[in-house]
Image (cartoon, rainbow, N blue to C red; front, side):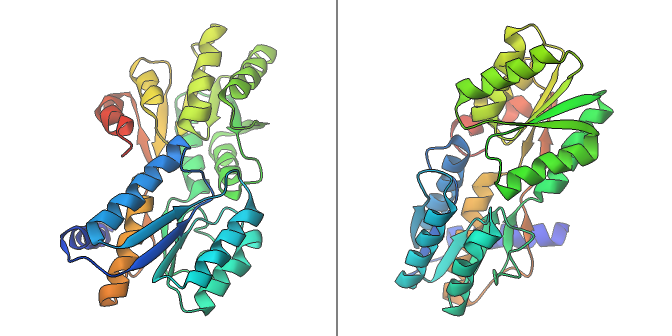
Length: 306
């Protein structure tokens, strides 16, 4: 594994140090670039384009819309780029469009979501984390810390990756109820507060997004004096990291989404120029950011890198 990551690091260094490539790469993601999480992915995409000299476009639907996303993939295929990067939150909806790209001879790399279906759809490799395993690891850690009854706050029910996070959490933790919400922090805060007020036995909350869900969850618990409730989240934000430092939250699960944007673009640029491609998937996470390490990444999170 160490040798594999060394190879990944070498590839990234080559991409940064190499000559400018006359390469066009299109990235189609299911998350919006103005979302705090996806803005970091987009930052990685743009940095890779700058480092390799490739022409890169980041595209995403205005909302979580699989029909629109599949149309975006089809439009990208019609442009015949040198490489295509896609996230795959719904293989049934996006699979035909991705296969069309592969059949057209366009190299495809998946990132963030879709690790379980990427290869059968024809992707060269996947850059991301196993969402189920990450949820399970988080659940096991929270159970180890004494949690007995938990809720999983899901802001996009139907997004396979997010659903897997909650399922993994239940597998690793035990008694878990899924609370569906939207992406509005005010709605999240209201629903979490209602759940905590209605059941005093809830002692653990897992959020699936740091800024949109994790921070409002902390605010809800603090507002009603439930400061003993353990709160963990997927992904990072400077605000939630500060909550960890301040003892208001327990940990964050870092999947290093900057790499999810940066590495696929770099790999596809190297592939277009030299025919180079890693021999397997690249696990970008999970890493648990606890109180002892949270302060170290706050500055980078605020800069849109972590």
